[in-house]
Image (cartoon, rainbow, N blue to C red; front, side, top):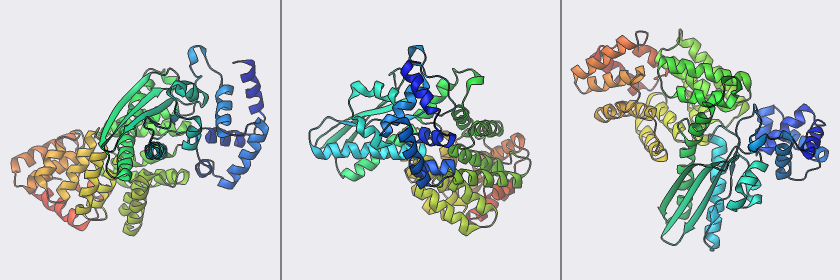
Length: 479
């Protein structure tokens, strides 16, 4: 640490604990409302704290505040940051427009803003606000230095070339400390409806980056696995839990619950983690992985509510809460929660999958679920196996049994609900031998599973879906 850095660290000591928490969160790009939700204070109180913080530190802008914290934190030889309990921070530089036309410059800025806003919602880690990044410009030569000054862990940059016929967009993810490229993709699209094009590109990029199988999670997990166990942060445990979370076996779901819980011990204000833990309890309930389905449902309720107290816009928490309400017989409340999940998660493939499943089996119409799942598949070209499991159960509910089997065979064979819907689909088509084989595997590998437990824990409250499942279960001789 330099003399100047030491001086900054001493000045930071003049801040109260609440002021320092506000300053750190604001420096990473969180809004007044987001900080207020995280710290349980009003947005106007956040503004008051920031006025005092700026005066005490002698800074005038968010960039100055971010640089102040970066300098005060100190560095190690080679530019490595010291260990921290804070999650990684993502900086998204404005996309560099290589065209002179003003319309394409506006397009590049609009796309940069959309990517920033939606990644802040879905990526599960802090994203520095767009207006902060805009003030820095989009000169590639400055990216590494600016990223370090802002305390970013990763930065995203891009270049746009366009004419009246086509646009070409290159997006890169780099390590802010080393400047090394971690991922790169090129998008070529026809230049038609400019607003639809902007939405399409933003959605594609967001779904490649975000989610448990997304680029950010994969890069993060690779880094976590190189760390000593004792040095893991809350976000590290969260990343490892996400990986287990999407395998849908009894062992992996139990491990996901353990890892999410460990993350929350380290950071009880981690809203995304509470939401994913709620989803893990939902999986435990419908698959019969826990000792008692009502306990799993209650745990799902508590954890979803915790997530929404911290972030009322968390779409995963709303989706989980909707299913919990349906479990308890509150179908109107379930529909309200599902509508909010769609409102806040309309661009996130994983949320669209969850909502499609809820429309097919809980509240809604299987016919309404099909467009949602088709859109989710288009949004995420990295579709993990669980997408196909969800697609299979929706196709079964829609009466498209042959397509259901094809989808289910691309899903996780360790999951009891996949085996159940395979047996149901084959039975509905009169394929008794295939149905019997899937049913035998289900009984042998998951002796505690039953169709009625799945119905209670998912829950299946859609009348037509409920009748179809029970009828096919009789044909397949499922427990």
